[in-house]
Image (tube, rainbow over all chains, first blue to last red; front, side, top):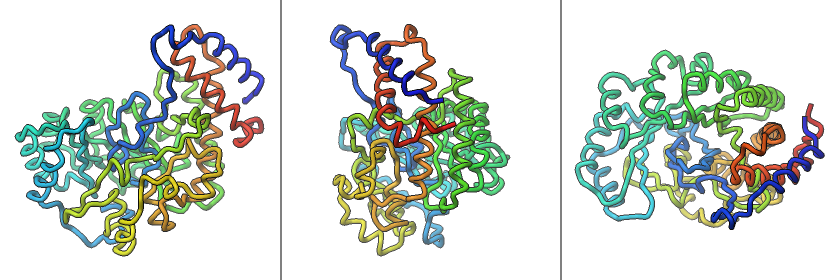
Amino acid sequence: MFDLLKLIQMKERLQLSLVCATELNYSYRDCYGCEGDCSGSCSGTCDDTCSGGCEGCGTNG
Amino acid sequence: MYCYEHDKSCQDTFDLEMAKKTISAVLKQKTEGDTIINFHGGEPFLSFEKIKVLCEWVWGQNFPNKHLFFATSNGTLIHGEIQNWLAQHKEQFVVGLSLDGNKKMQNLNRTDSFDKIDIPFFVKTWPKQGVKMTVSQQTISDLADGVIFIHECGFVDIRTNLAEMTDWSDSKYLDIYRKQLRKLAQFYLEHPEIQPCSLFNVKFAGILNNDIRKWCGVGTEMQAIDIDGRRYPCHLFFESVCGKDKSKKAKSIDFRDPNQYISQVCGLCELLPICPTCYGSNYISRGKIGLRDPDLCKLNKIRFSEVALYQYQKIVNTDIAKLSNEERYNDLRTLEAIEKIHEVLDLSKLK
């Protein structure tokens, strides 16, 4: 079950374990999905690595 | 013919010459991204002969714009000649199957069609393609079993959503939905090698930046063309779907303007950046693209709390040493977001 203290402790452990992005020569990014390029059927072919776009489409088919 | 279509009298399909002209105009222009040409039914493969002629004509034209044909299908007609043709062109033509769960669920939602689908054909031909699983009031109590069944069929990507434009007002669905999500979460925690269905793919980190996103390409990246050649923001705005008056009025909507697609109430909600919606359904049911279904809102909140709990459990039990740096960052952002909204979702009260 949910334990806020445990969450905070894990957060700190993750924070400490992160290697600086510049050392790895890439930028961190928050990835939310395909930003609306899915086609109309909403089971389209949007295949971004962080897929998730088109959710909510009301085409029940 | 779709359940959401307002006018079910039209039996026509697209005109081949008009389709050639329209597609030609699009594909002649070289664009940065690829173009997806989506055949949308009813059941598109009722018009297989026309689709075949059109696609083969397009492939013979060597258009500069990269493109892919796509169709969502109930699968019932995809056998014999159609299967052979699709297998031959599987790199150029992708089919997404609508499969609403196990046999009982599929037959409830889609009139005894389960035995007419060659499921292994879809798994084998397009192994990465998502399956569209619509959950109705009739099938929600079997949601977890249905998703697990589709995993067992061999599909990797399951895109599950609650049916839009239907009545979810009965409060019994809240409890049923929570129990089903809890059961699925347990399944995924016991099977970490399985990619969870889309219900569990909530990007909580979006809350940290308060990103306002539009959930699909309606009216911007996407254009839907009716069989008479008229263009619409998406197929839900066709006259046959939302009626003549509403269809006409939709022309004045600016889909780039967030004020149009976010209501005042939703604008105040902390969960807005992760809360999906269908603008077409909103428009048909409530007259504005930003006016969401308040009953789905309650169900979405249940979903976010169960998925937050699942993601929290997964992350706190992870061995950090086995994670890449990017995975660590993503997990950190997820926990930061869950910390921010845990009170809104009443996570501490969940048993």
